[in-house]
Amino acid sequence: MNETNFMDNYVLAQDSWLIALEGIVALIFGFFVLIWPEMTLEFLIILFGVFAVVGGILAFVAAAKAEKGQRGIRIFGGMVCIAVGLAVLLVPRLTLAMLLIFIVLWMLVMGIFKLIAAFKIPKEMGSKWVFGLEGIFYIVFAVLLVSLGIEGLELLCLLIGFFAIFAGIILITLAVMVRSQQMQVAA
Image (tube, rainbow, N blue to C red; front, top):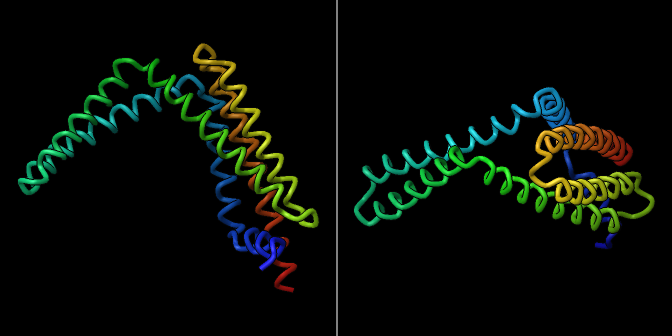
């Protein structure tokens, strides 16, 4: 199978409605973040901290019901979850710094992946520029986040909101293009 057929099949195999749905969710998320940027960060930190503590408590419950050989690891896991959850709730700025690092790493990896995909898609396919633009956008946004640091957290939220809206628009555009290509192949 040559590279052109592989990439054609890759693009056409995607469900356009799933791509569009992802775009719609990104748009909704983006608008939510733009409306309440400070609440978004606080909510994420609190939600994660509570989630970790509850997970630790549930690990202790599971340890009580587990067989003897399984109890130690569950108790240890529960202690780690509770410790992380309490640390997140008690030292939220450290959590924000870690969140920033994970977001930047994710965006860099996704940007590189999208650029590689853009270069592998044949020039004849209309979606090539969309993948390339999205990849560049991911990388530029990651660099911008690093330059802001933790001091610009509200601005960070606003940028994440704009990013989500832009990504949603790109995904919906891609869904329309994929659907169009699927219909051309079916005809």
